[in-house]
Image 1 (cartoon, rainbow, N blue to C red):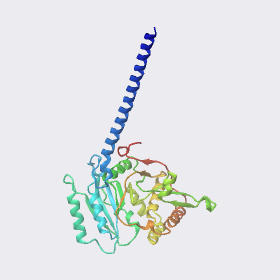
Image 2: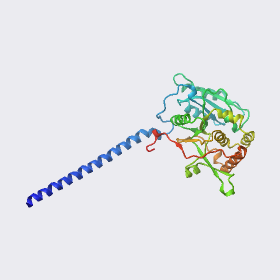
Image 3: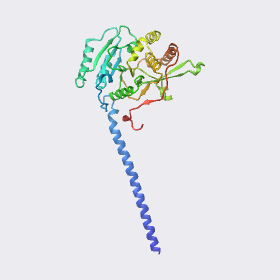
Image 4: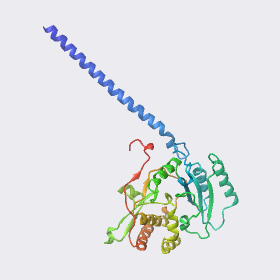
Length: 329
């Protein structure tokens, strides 16, 4: 009997060892699969880590020109940056035309126009050339970037500065977001406002930059240095924006982007949409790096509130993210 008992115990022990071994093998197999999938995911995203010149998955070409977009690019005596930007954006499939906002005292040189036209021809797709135009302005004013353009073939405008580069895939994704909400602004650079409680009333506001957006997780503006909006807002800005606001912007050389955010929010009663995207700043620092910049922007916000008779900006926490480009969403 004792021998039979020992045999049963031996069999049970062997079963436990076998079960433990199988369990260990399963765990190792699961870990190996996880590591393998992680390596595949990293490998598929390596080109994206190399910068905006790398190849990336793009959306299908857009055949109907009205479904494409026009770039309105602000520039000022930075010809190398202008050439870089035009060289990049003319490779984007959804682009229909580029309008360069020119406010310099001298017209663009023949050599510059020849160089840019050569870039356009070199990047032509299927025999279709991107239309390139210089919109010449007699007055040097930041309002020029929002002057009405009567010969636009597209409804969508991608307003951008000459020193900012986004991968074409990011631009096309932002354009697809705008197509789903064509009355609002869709952009990459969020900003926020909030009530200044130290003033003892609800009618005074503070302008907040990127770190305020990061800290609070909310925003109420997207800057026009990189944003999509409908072309109708150029007409509204040119013809309906109070002249006192446009004069203030010309005199102070600041806040035209805040004014456009006020204009769109006042027309829609809705917040903008922030699109996550990798930004490459190819130029030197601008006016935002100067001392007192936030204070000047706060002054603009409160002045515009007084002009509009109310605060039209609407805060939100929504952010559009391309799920093809992230691991967890």
